[in-house]
Length: 432
Ligand code: UD1
Image (cartoon, rainbow, N blue to C red):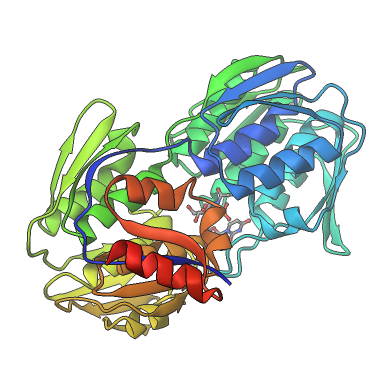
């Protein structure tokens, strides 16, 4: 089985560069098919979710040209099918954006229900409500979302919860609806603003993304564009916490410090030094970190996608911390794995009670999902001895060149076939 083999105990140091935002890229790649002209997208992260989505749009007739590792050109002029249902797209979350884009452009879409990490029930009722309020008929049958409309008409849509996916999906469909749409109580995450900016670069008329109300005036068509995706807030945050957990000192480049404020504030609170520059942050950890209480909230609050990494860091901080998860119901599945490494954490309901320990010890652990997988890698890098993390495919869905980037700042990590004794011994000898 392919695993990350890690020898912990090395403080990370040097510089690391963050890639494009995965969750923005998923929205932007799909939005690109709404134009009948070429759209060039730069700073696309080289992660598996992106590859799956690019293949999905190719199968319905979009032309996808890979210019280089982080640039693609997409042309949606020759799309000949509005039905998307491959095995691969059923496993990712961002596939739900195909409904908004195809419904907006062709007034119909038949798309397999989305998958993604098993971190809660993850309903899509707000997406459906939004499409219906724009005039579509939506039903779910045989595992697919079926949306159709004679025409879409702008409306006043109030989201019951600030859903990232629903906000982007409704925004895409409303771009090509007749008249004006207002989305109240939208999500405000940085990638909402990025997708809106991208759609505007294609000729859409969207105002207020990132605020409490998004106003969209429908246009007849979208045109070609060139666009560069924002840096990944969660990849950057993961490296920040990784540096802190290993007591390192690293300059994290190509970030937007404003997007990292909730993370920087917590790191400062527990005793790390965080220095912000124009497009980079430096994190330097002191010897002893202290406890903190953290509650996940929609942006600009502390991101749920950073919760497992933060819990891991607090497991190594002095005192008792409480981490409360308010977005997804079952996002503490990784805690049993952290316990195998010597952490002292109990979970009650939606809160983890963490009593800091002096150190963790390496163990064989399994990544239950994408961000929890990254958290276990952080634990392994901080732990004494060898850690082997399996189910690395979850991690590769969202982190580009993860182990290479970690190695570049001194982390001892390699992807190996752990069933092959020689590979295990080779790694152990290399890092001894
Ligand atoms: C997106 C991100 C994911 C991140 C999450 C929250 C992508 C591909 N994924 O997921 O990484 O963890 O935002 O920042 O961008 N909800 C409903 N009904 C709906 C939609 C959502 O009740 O129709 C609830 C969810 O159960 C959850 C909350 O709203 O409690 C937020 O979910 P949402 O923002 O939609 O998350 P995703 O778009 O699935």
